[in-house]
Image (cartoon, rainbow, N blue to C red; front, side, top):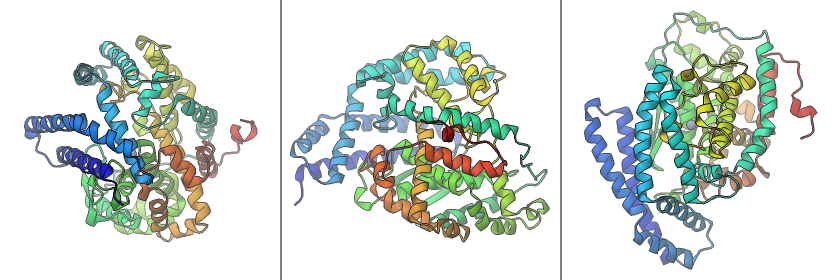
Length: 511
Ligand code: ZN
């Protein structure tokens, strides 16, 4: 029996999805193909499309279709998820007054330019007035959306539905001390790998050839996707059958483009492996946190594992027969090279151990700002203090400190925790996939990466966003999110790599 109210809603929402995907295609083109002189006309084209999209997303027709479908109801999980997601998007699009949205667009457009200048001049005071305004407007936005506990809950919910400060605090309190301890222990270790390449160049063509081979082995379907070049790598899609990856190539480093593409490929598989029944609904794909768990699983847990390099080392050596330094490397050497850990000022250049401390610092400062515990004027000092406490280094200037990320200038507060959540989800999923597949390690050594990809498809990707993140973790792993899986993963990997002798604090103290 078809449910006519649900079908009518699906038809309308399908058109809205199509419009969003056309805009996505124009953005993809802007990043990868468009000649620079077309920027102005493209801006106008995007402007009119986003106006149409907003009209359609806030129209009375949608309100009516949604209310009718809600009143009719459905017991099918996909229908329930559809109603939930359409309601969420509709509420977010209509709860903010139009004047507020316009002002925020204006403030953030200006803030972006000022942030670029402040970062260039290493002068936070230039950015301070606009950031103060952005924080105030975010607090206002939380009030419009409605919140309990902390205004940050309303903002985080925009990025990871259902996420609360109580939950983030619980997880970050588990992580903080053992991560700081691990960073210090690695810092004290004399067993750091040295970079073996000096003036060697690794041509883009060869790097791309190897990247495509690995993506195919992972199960990425090039009949339903592409790989192109972009200065800031990303993944986007306009259909379950049209998924676009981008990567960038550094000719002095033979590993970074590959790992970047594996990251984006992980995002791509989430989209490509969704059930076709979800096409033209908001349900394929995943929340930011779950999405990031898949990209990091492929990039870090798989791509930086000894098993993976046992498989790939012969192929990468064959790719560069002239390079003597490459010919000397064994799997174990590359494993050490791609897992170098060193505290750095810049988040996007950091490794998988220090990365989460960068995130924690940002989250704690955002929470203090939004809850009025910290003034924007005091932010640089607070930033530097936490850098010293967590990573043992103090930025020499604000450009390498508080001014480094674009997010705040764009008005985004509450986004950062999704990166660390991704790491936590990925380690817990990894634990479960290994329990279900006891020979996974040797499969990977033989290049059978599809074993992992099929498991992820069946357990996670197929279902898209039918469940919320907490429900996915519970369904797939049989328990709630627990930071100890990630801590175990890190300590088990880095203890032999750096020949550490310490016992992690979380294993000796009761928590
Ligand atoms: Zn990502």
